[in-house]
Image (cartoon, rainbow, N blue to C red; front, side):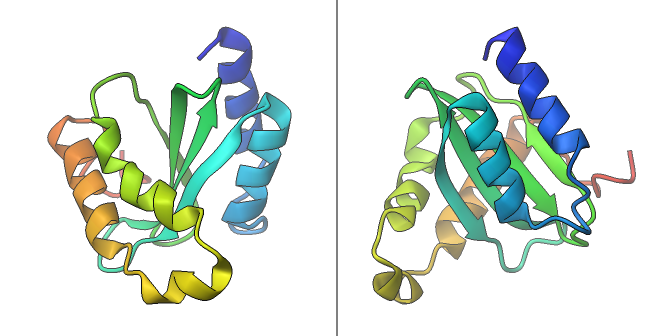
Length: 133
C-alpha cells in the first residue's frame, strides 16, 4: 500500500466513530477515497472479539483487512503482506459476489473462523480485546 493509501485508510478510520457510523459506511468511504473495492464483508458469529470482518482490495493485488470489535466500538486495521494465503479469502469473496437471495443459504462462519485463526497464529490479530492493549 502506498503512503497515500495508508494515510487515507488511517484518516477514514480515525474519522469514523464506530458507535455512530456503520461498519458498511466506513467501508464504502474507504473504498471511495482510495479507489479500492470491497472484496467481502461478513458477520462473524462465535468470536469473542470480532463482530464483522471485511477486506478491501487495491490495485487487484493489495488488500486491507478490517475487523469491527465485538462491542462495536472500534475498527481494527489488520496489516497484511503475504503472511496469509489468498485461499483463506476465496470463500468469503465468493459469498460476497452471490446474489442477495442466495447469501442466506451459505454459512460463512467456517471460512471467517479459519481466516481469524490464520491471522492470530501469525500474530496479526491479538487474542486480547482491541481496546485492552
